[in-house]
Picture 1 (cartoon, rainbow, N blue to C red):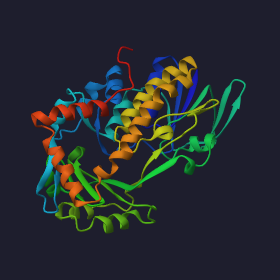
Picture 2: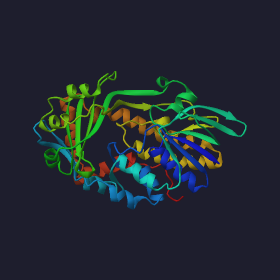
Picture 3: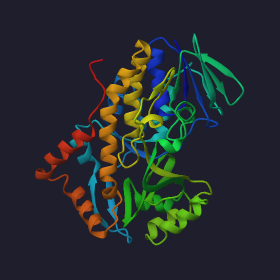
Length: 381
């Protein structure tokens, strides 16, 4: 079996690892010019943690995990108004959680794939099914023959568009925009320390947290509809007035920050069409609001590898769909509490986080996190 995977992100890399383990030949193609080191901070638990454990990658991931001490909500003056210490969060998840930058997770996955070709700077332009499988045309002019083509190329998937039609039929914006970038500011880094600091006002929230090599990462989210023509100008306008910490971060905003809708991908029909099958955000993006997009992608990759080996792609979908539906529903239901539109909602949210470590509330929090961290992976495999 030979598989062409479009997208060398977390979903595609994980799938490649499991396919190679099953004896398949794999080619990864990626539109980016090279490996990406950017991305946001994630709380890595649930399906992704379980898959990484099965892959033997937890020691490598612990080595690059961020040493965050607390999630702290602060006001415009930098005064703490709520939050939760990460040791409490970890204890509620029985220690099965890591704070990771997305780029660091990708780096560990790439390092686990020696010998598997990754062709950067190209993508899929067309495909044709043949009696023997599928021929895949690439943007660099090449054509690859394979048994399967997997679209693991994210929320704006070109494979999905080629096989299922225009993006507008599947993309479900949740009414928010998100942006992120890295910055160097030693003084601001000292003020943030090892915290994940969030400054929120109705409809807007700015997060700052330490990245590797002494840098800081800015993670921004705000209510919005149409994407702006000039993301940097939009960021400067929307987040001005959120206090000194945010103002200092805004001064470092680059000309081309990451900027996009907060959106889900909802496909009522199958995730496969003939010899083409979708994985991760291309098929079922759960959105930043739901979290665990990378973790869900890794769980899906684990299941899809077995499905491709046995030819039971419908079984992969049957197992993943209810799991994904729950994640997407949670993302829609909690969006207004992650980025509240009213001052009283902000106060309630901050207070709830502060109470999570208390004896009476910790049992409730444990049950809530158990549901949130439910895994699609059978660890007995």
